[in-house]
Length: 229
Image (tube, rainbow, N blue to C red; front, side):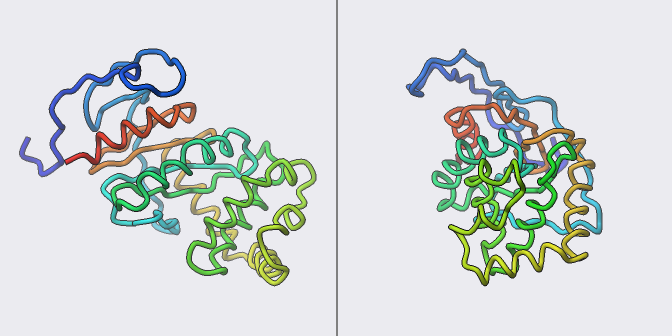
């Protein structure tokens, strides 16, 4: 094709059973490339509203592959995906500059404390570079302590100083952050996101949806395929 888009890589069939992943999993065949679907569902596209504030893609914004995650801080499956997929992903690819992760906040109305927790995560930006990620990490790790009663301050007390907690509470109550959260929710709706976590892998002009239940060894193999020379 002569449209300037990245060209698909040569066909390559691989089986999840080909590598020792620690436990037996169903054999899955991968059709190739940007349409490569390791348990991938159909492509999903959506326009980002002009008013939306784009969260940072960490650790390297210019990475060739971008993993977009729409999460609710009170969602148990989001916590699981964060701990079992995003953490090892950043360990494996974070230093290479080849893959980055952008975390959108999408609090569900069915979770009583998700909106406030999301605002706390946004308020983390006031703590300096990486502040948002620090707060989101602490929220997921302490989720069982605040999900029932919504006592975010007590749950986060082991990770932040009193001054930092005061700043988070102050910033979380501002109209500015409420508008920013609505912007991220608008992005989710533009992507037709209706549940959490919802995950996309973006490479070139292609955006592929992947199931949140994917096991990390399989996700890692897929990402490694995309970034290989």
